[in-house]
Length: 194
Image (cartoon, rainbow, N blue to C red; front, side):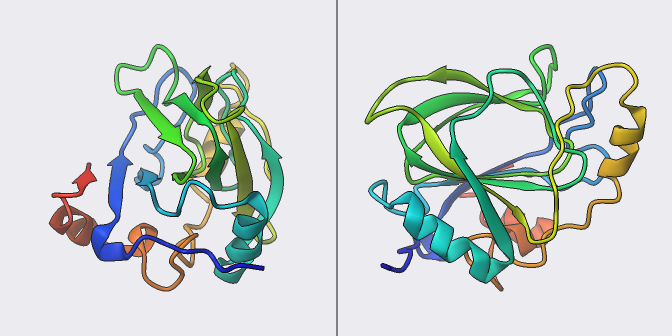
């Protein structure tokens, strides 16, 4: 199995976003861990199998290959790591009516770390290079749930606060953006969007 060829950290283009809670979707407010988008972090020709072989070395369990649901949802029990291996799409984070929402275009070679509580959905699959597809992974031992920001999910919102943050960066391991302090993320602002 070929090893994953990662962009050197010094050259990584990274976007981070803190998204306010809105309409029963907690987003990043309960824990202040931002949404991370790693742009062109690996070659766009990287196979799903190569990604699935690499992620467990950083404490993640790959669980599926699929697109993203077109309905806003979030997970109250775990963070989610999405590695795009085919196509290009526009994704929405934070909820449709949220003034602080984030719309992002991602493509093969990008990865997204979606913290517990962050609403997300597919807005548009551009169909470039085949249907938009990702490997979905979660920290080992975590089971994901589906929450939709509906009335009666208050206990789910509270659960988001208790989800421990990642122990390793999903792609880089012991040193990588999800482990960096806010100050270090600020230092890399030339490549980073906070």
